[in-house]
Image (cartoon, rainbow, N blue to C red; front, side, top):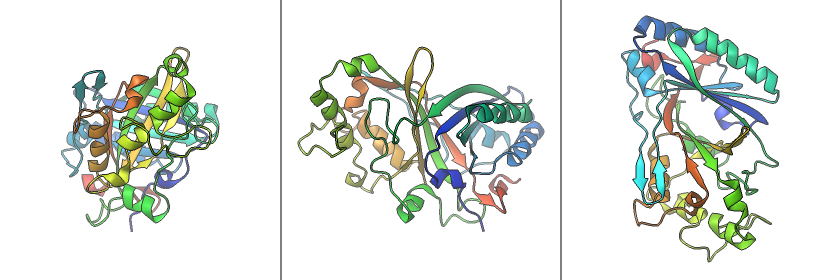
Length: 296
């Protein structure tokens, strides 16, 4: 029986390293298969969660129903880019050195078919706060509801137990946010920072109103596993949303950019996405990634 990669449903780790791999031009299908075999031996689904992009699936001559390109949007004051990758690996742990060396081993094992194109080190801030100081993932489904939101069922062997995931890197303009009054900050999110309670009369642009998952038809619940990131020049959020399909995330994103009613999410006043990609996270079977849906 196939099960989800356990790291998807587990609490967010203290530290993480997100690795994004590109398929080398001209890589032979045999090389892609060899890379995936190496991935299987290094992905336990808990400390290392793996997601396959559309280009890698296509390179194997396979297909996954529901996996497609990331949507792009360009409207007044809003730009949402698509930056496809062949493979995403979410390394989870509590020791930055161990994560670094695990990533190096993975990079070497996946060559020559796959090369590391981007890496982001992420971390927990306080009790799972965004760098703005607001709690992240307050409305996350829990327990059975989390499984229902994030895990594929009823699709057959090799697909049941899988997940789809959207991964974006957001860059915060923290000085711009800090220049807002406390009330303006609260109204941007639609929650009070002091107690995390929703503000009933927040404007329609408030983030909680734009993304109230139960307000969609059908309801648009996703399982968020986002974490802050920072380097010497910039900082922000690695947004990670798992789903049994990509439909819920896409509904949330459409409303955030104002595609439905022209009201854009107030978050865009101080933050912006600089990447966006979709991946299919295979299920686990007998302790290993189950790639049977790809003919492996």
